[in-house]
Image (cartoon, rainbow, N blue to C red):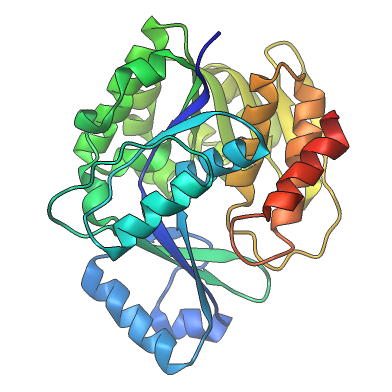
Length: 331
């Protein structure tokens, strides 16, 4: 019996989420629906504009893999996370938030640098546009890996955002190799269409031929496969993953369990914020698999969890909402 259900690694970012209009995005020259890397000065410039508009903000520990690990933990999984934060207020906030969620995370912080931050801009159509200053998280390296914890986990979960830094990519490759040597299954999130379009070779290097499980949305699947229809994308992803999940927004998801394709229906809701929906799906699905639940039921659970989180602002549910979902599906 392994100690951890899921070991996650990714950029440790403090997310600040703000409601904006499409006109605001145009005024700030922000690419809608994409993740854009910016420097600290550019992020400060965006914040100055937003503060002058008195737009309300909310803050949470985040980063894609971080969100997924927190979700798995709140559902009842035992989880570990490797990231890198600085010895500053945001870094301390991040660590406290992770501990509050029950996630095991090394207590050491970098002696210098700035904790990474992500501005998440939500428009009335519920689309999220991200402007990310990686800060010290760009220096995530093999030093932050805990080999014994990886070996003692059912799943290693890697976000493809790590490909944007040389040390992050190298750390992801080393973690994957440790996992494969110790019977830990490797799950990879494609993370963002732009990441797949611009860093596809690096992502494939992280995968090392074939992984156990891939998470992506339809746009990321098309970008990776370099096709524009779902059946063709499915065949291409089968070449690099034993199993995979392609989320389809409000339409649900398509899951390949290694033998057959399973269509998961979407849950009809009024979405106001799609930030964290894919991360929530991954967290719920990984929790399900770690509990021995089949792909069909796990997919239905994950779809319900993702549908729940898009009806409110922010990437989290309340503790009662996590418990209620588990009780509804599995008790």
